[in-house]
Image (cartoon, rainbow, N blue to C red; front, side, top):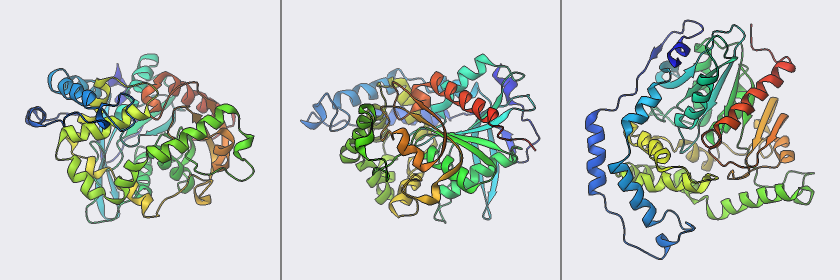
Amino acid sequence: MTGEFGTLPKPAKGVADFTVAVPDDDVDELKQLLKLSKIAGPTYENTQEDRRYGVTQAWLTKARDHWLNEFDWRACEAHINSFPNFKAAIEHDGETLSVHFLALFSKKSDAVPVVSIHGWPGSILEYVPQLGLISREYTPETLPYHIIIPSLPGYGFSSGPPVSKDYDVATATRILNQLMINLGFSTGYVATGGDIGSGVARIMAVRHDECKAIQINFCPIRNPPEHYPRESLTEFEKSCVERGETFLQTGAAYAMEQGTRPSTLGLALNSSPLALLAWVGEKFLAWSDEDPSLNTILQDVSLYWFTQTISRSFYPYRQRFEGKLSGSGAENPELFVKKPFGYQLFPMELMPAPKAWAATTGNLTWFRQHGSGGHFAALEKPAETKRDLEDFLKQLAEEKVQFGS
């Protein structure tokens, strides 16, 4: 059935079908490296079951054994390939980048194009559960929207960034906007995202006319906006702000390391799958409302390992620490979204912004507060985020936001 969703609505130059196929030698090498990798002995810090100092020795041991003896990359690969996969050649600044994306294309003439953008340490895998729900509910003849899930430039099966140039999120945004134009959606699309994807969506709305609206689930605000002090918040909202403050105090050191020493960290993590598992696995455990399954974590870590992209994934953090991108619209007026803006508040997000605070960053026309869910919203809550998207699109239709020519 999903194969029927693979027909592009218009001919697109430079777009070709793609199949994920990791060489057997790479799979064998991973297992050999896991067998040879040592795990440090017990310490006070790595035996704390509350994980306040990071992943435990026991968890890493269990995860390594599962990765080596039970995890099936080929099953993950087959699941990715069960959806239409493509690669698009995008010309930019004298260079050609290859952008990988998953997609479900509708045959409806009024289908709304949607691009959903992952973050770090996420990947296209964040949206695969949502794609499964969509493909089971609709046919190409009934799907009311096109949905495109790209790998950010430098991530996954996408190429880049070029080693000869200082690459940034704004450039990645231009690449993805061009992808949507090349697919035939120059008359308008909606962007959604979380983590880095929320920043990309915001920049799309601010700087690219083709993006008509955005829906995001990450809107970090460090300081109370003027006229919206902490005292005006509900108890739930105060707990959200406190969670953000705790994250900045005890959980944000990774971002400083990735932003200030990306070369050293990238080289270190790329030298050992076990090191990569510890670094990325910690984030999935700490940032999710409920612990993801080992399979879920290992799928993502395996994708980073097989594509050798962890060292290429840090440029958004370096850019922030070099002062090239800051704020979310409240702290940086240049990123204020004047177009329709939807915001999903998940209570276990890293820095869940209260509604009134988020409204200071753009033209907030749609809002939904969820009772559970964390940083990887599309992965943790695929049914809920699918409903949010569809409700947002319905509201845009009621407001007569135009996407056609």
